[in-house]
Length: 119
View (cartoon, rainbow, N blue to C red):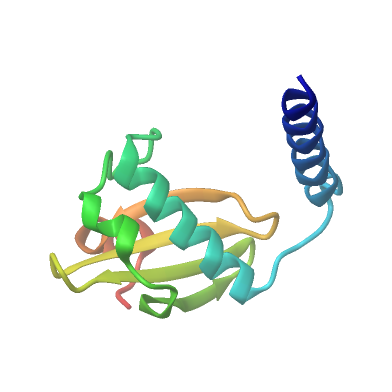
């Protein structure tokens, strides 16, 4: 019972820490944080489809290192992050807004069309 109480308390603390971390809806992220968001998004999309146009990604995206994600461009409302998966030779572009939300994930061909220019 004591172990259960400790686990419950630890879980509640983790949830409250997460709530405080995202409590300010007016905060903005920097490029390094956007890169981390893109990598996290790639890992999540390697597990299941989250409604992005790319659908579920190849499992190998969950193993792509942060160093393979770079800022391609800073745009008015956020960042464009380029991710490269050497194992399957695939490049994806992640649009991350200033609040840290990944708003789109596009394959290279689709990104050129929707974005208006190549990277």
